[in-house]
Each structure stands twice: as structure tokens, then as C-alpha cells.
Image (cartoon, rainbow, N blue to C red):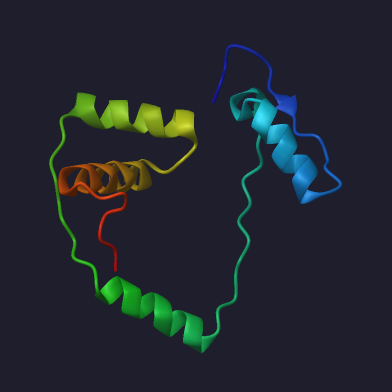
Length: 107
């Protein structure tokens, strides 16, 4: 988070469009964003779909230097995404580039 200056409160929005328009023109790093830990109930069918999707995946472990991981985490914080999701996105972008396609193969 930006510690050099006081964070502004996020305004209340009347519509999703109003909120989208706001974030299109404002930097989220200047605002105090709330973490929400909301529980989501899934149907048995949704749980099965998620389980099936995960079963199609393989785990790959890579070793990064402390400097590399720190850099990735810094970029992820700036983009406000999880660093693992950022690495996944980068891999997908480079796969697509190497294969000469607009999107990489997915499950």
C-alpha cells in the first residue's frame, strides 16, 4: 500500500456503471480498499465442475531467486493481483506469443 500519503476513502456508488467510470479515471492505489471475506455457497454441480477443472491441471514447481520473487510480488501489488496469478498470466502470454496465436491453449 502507498504509505507516503493518506489513503482516500472509496466513494459510494449508485450503479455499477458509475463505479466503473470512476475506476477508469482514478488510481486505486490512492484509495483505502476493503478486504471482504465473504463465504460463497456452491451447488454440488458447481463443486464438481471446479473439481473436474483442477483434475485437468498439473503442478509445476519453479525456483526463483529472492530478487526475482520480490520483483514479481512488487509488480503484482502494483497491479493488485496475486503474484501467482501474475506469473500464470505471463506464462500464458509467452506461450501464445511463441505459438503465434492470440490466446494460449486452455483447459
